[in-house]
Image (tube, rainbow, N blue to C red; front, side):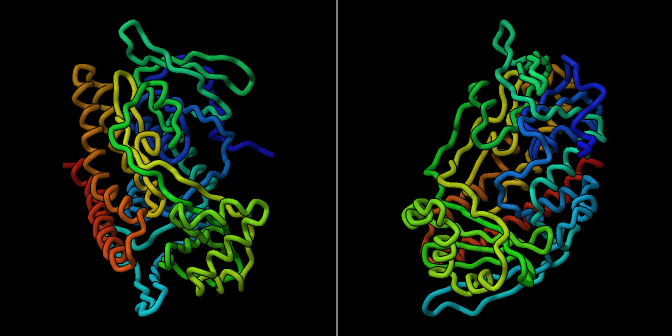
Length: 405
């Protein structure tokens, strides 16, 4: 089988770069693309052999789609077969629950859709875009440590390459984009500035043979479930429950699919009936008790982006949009720091301040939703979240205009 062109590069054995990015998925590939577009020498080190799937919420809300459109990548993602999503259903269950509500995704901030692409396809689009922009990807490469100079500044990384070679790669900036359990964050000593109780259980599978039409959100007793239409006429169907309600799911072992279907039927039966009318095409997978925390995003010679710097409960399905936004904030700051070393401290501080301001409202809403308040409050929080996401999308759409001004 022919390997994707972005995996190898004529410059793949270099020992120096302006920027080394540890992690080559949403946050890392986007950061690399933007820095390479600005003319910087970027190397991405990714442990997995891409393309490869990964656990994901799948959801790209309006802000994420806005960014893909601005970067000229939306058509590339649609060309993979990701269906444009143009409606949203919200349904409650229980005595006195109102009737379901379906709304059309209206054109705002320059886009009229949302998306839920499979990650191995989205990540491939991003990696190819980074490579076209001049970045070098090294996949199957494991970073084993950071290198510091005499003053303690991070000045590079050590890595094991696929052929067994051990390389020391020097860089003016090392970016950790290696996920929620970031080893880079630990190696550079990034401080956790905020930490809250971990989230509950989010388990999902893929279901075909059903006429899925748009995003769906179903609110039951101690359960929040939904549908994200994705590739191959299938949908990612997911169920989120608080820890106290997840014991039977987590102890089911080989019977996890049956336990998941029973939980779905007991909490959001209309969705369960539709799932049972189709075909489950994959094992149940997902996440358990992921952290809700914020880490410092910058330090001498290093920065963190995406889940490496900030992670929240998947209940709001916003991780990829966060990654895109923060990659752009970091790239803008890093370009300034690399071009004007005397401004480095101020430039990188501006990235941290911008990220912290951008996450404040949605992080609060996510924590409240993840605590599963009474249904009436849950609905209120969802309404607040919708307003916050609309404002975010408008702000992201305006970045191009502000940059050109």
